[in-house]
Length: 463
Ligand code: NAP
Ligand code: MG
Image 1 (cartoon, helix red, strand yellow):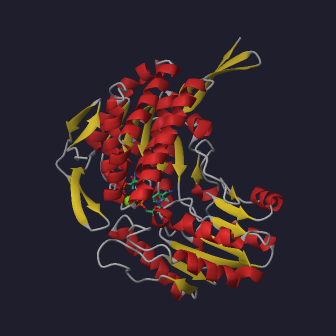
Image 2 (cartoon, protein in one colour):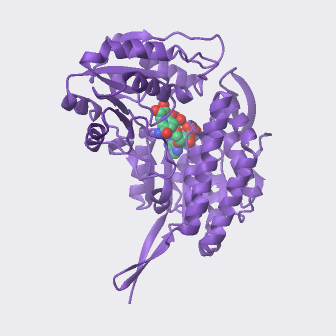
Image 3 (cartoon, rainbow, N blue to C red):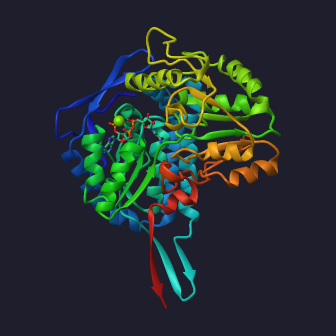
């Protein structure tokens, strides 16, 4: 696609208030592929005004009509899936197959789910002598990261629109082209002017202006815990709604009854997918001491299949590569045993990191506690189930996890985990299941009816 040199506000592409731009870089070859405008607080203000003006009309639109517009949006995304995949490959570096199946495919699924939910959701319910109305919260300020550029946008915009809210989006500076493509799709789908608006720009400038704007009723943020904490504090100060989807350090718990080969292989695939840039990735693999060395050997074998530039892409930016290499060096310095990969560049150009497996990782090590956001897996040994649970729950995060073993044992273990979702024996992703974190992994849920409810507040009428 061709980059726009303006902002999508009030149903048209209009020039930015200032002249600053952001260079978009292809992380696979380090070439600049486009420039987009870097929005200022003035642009944000114009977008919020457009969203405010559009709000009463969209909120009053019948749910079935909102559903029809979201279905049209889903259809445009499906028709342009190849272009979406190519754009994500160009600005994120995702291998073409992953770009097609996940980066383009998942948002189509999620948009479709909200087309159905908008039509079927009970926006009114009876409670005793009351009628409870579920009404849209208002103008949503959405701030999204680069790791799943379109999914992160659709997971906020689709439920917000289904609820009857209007939206201003500030996407990640590293992946603005996918966001511009989404704005084109919104336009093509015939959503009324001002219902969805896009301001590209830098987090501390455009993002902060959006989060703090008094015309925004709800801030929905996905990204780092550091920025999320600030956004939560600002929202608390202004007494406005906030949803935070933050980091993770999820555990892949392999119980003694598990199919070890499958648990290790799926576990490695889970982390290596998207070059490890997945907040819910199972980056800590917990194995019983009796099968630990067997698991280490299987993990080394499994990770060898992820050849950089083929099955695994680069990281999004030089900055992210430096961060991840720093963690790998830290792991070595703190005494973890490197069984695959390491802090060496696997290719001359591109922000690639060698798929890395550490063994003998102990709970107090930095690489066992902090989110690395790269292709790095830590194998940890446990004595018994209580020890495994202590390790699994022993971080500030609680976003996801996996348990492998006898079904009943696995479910019993999952019930004791402090985390928002657990895959049992390789359970499939469900786009209708609530997604979100316990502890410092966040506040609120995305996807399905729980994701829709984030954008609604209630009014009780008594009779
Ligand atoms: P980030 O800075 O938190 O970025 C997320 C979004 O927030 C981006 O749109 C960003 O804009 C914006 N932002 C940054 N500072 C802001 C501020 N002061 N006010 C309002 N918005 C602001 O995350 P990152 O720097 O891209 O990545 C850093 C780390 O965050 C990663 O290594 C990873 O650990 C974590 N992360 C988590 C997720 C997740 O899905 N939970 C996703 C991505 C990253 P810019 O793009 O201009 O910075
Ligand atoms: Mg940032």
